[in-house]
Every structure is written in C-alpha cells, then in structure tokens.
Length: 231
Image 1 (tube, rainbow, N blue to C red):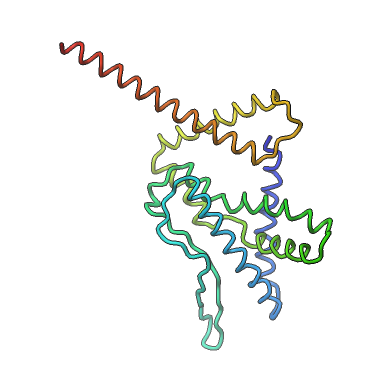
Image 2: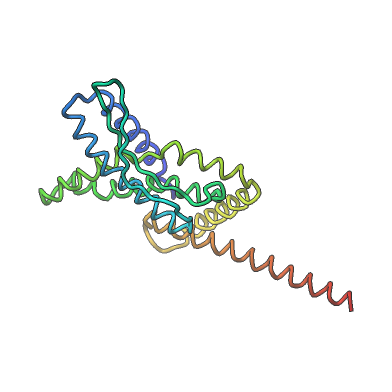
C-alpha cells in the first residue's frame, strides 16, 4: 500500500529538474520544440485541476487552459511565456482537503498516465502509438509539478480553519487505517492503487456522515430533554 509514493516523489523531482534544465540550456530553434511540448502539458495540467475541482465540489470562478504572456527583456527581444490558470471562487474558503487534492491532482494523474503509457514506449507494438505515447509522456513531464500557488493554498487552507482541517485530517487517517487493516483480508492478490484510493474516499465519507448523524442525533436527544424539562 502506497509503495508508489517514493516513485511519485522521484517523478516530481525529475519533472522539475528536466524542465528547468531544458528551458534554460536548450538553444534555439530546438527550444521552440520544448515550449511546444510544454503547451500541451500545461493544458493537461489545468484539465486535471478542473477534474479534481468537480470531484471535490470546489467552485471554479474562471479557467484559462493556456495563457500567453509577453515579457520585454530589451527593445529588440520579446520573450513569450505560456501559463494556465484555474481561479477558485472563494479560494480563502477552501477546506484543507480540497486544497490538498486540487493542488496535487495534476501530479498524481500525470504520474499514472505516464506509468500506463510507458509500456507502449518500452514495448512498442505500433509506430503511431509509440510516438503518441512518447509525446504525451514528455508533455506531461514538463508540466506535472504543482505550481507555487498550488502549494501555498495547502498550508493556507489549514491555517484559515485549523479545527476543521484537523478534523478532516483525522478522518483521512482513520480511513487510511481501515483500508490498511482490511486489505490483507481481501482474497485478491494485488489491488491497483487507484482502487485503494477510491476505497479510502468511500471510508472517508462513511466516517464523515456517520459523525454528522451522531452529532444530529445528540442534538435531537438534547433538545428533547430540554423540552421535557420545560414542561
């Protein structure tokens, strides 16, 4: 369980280092090829943000899958940069879990897509599929890493509402613990990690709505006692 986490960290570091080195030291006109690959990766990166916003019920204010900005370094040279942007409605009201999942979604989804497509590159059976898979892998690797904004939102959301963030963290830990306990008892040789993540999500909501039910029940009983005392 979670054996892939060290590999994801290596994937993240590799993505950061390779994209930085290629953009910094690749000469023209080859640099335009790198930038072209990054444009596709940026669109994919923002798409995964949108997907996780939908899954976590995080309201989106504005979406820019690809934004071109121009920076003038001197009168005779213009540098074009490509970025994407997902603006969250009420960003300061995001819960810790929302910020965590939305911020890390591109990295996690990108890792699994690269992992799945890698087999078509290592063991090519079709030339077109080989080049397509290689193109997508390179595109994703250049833009898989979370942006500084993605990373800042995670601790900021915890600080904005520490009690509820701690509550979410406890529910998440309980869900992971339950899944970790029941996995050895499942008569399945190997479960895919994505299935494990879905199981954790299911148990998270079971814990969440169980506590909500108990809380409502407690207030109902308490209210009934107060009414009896008044009469």
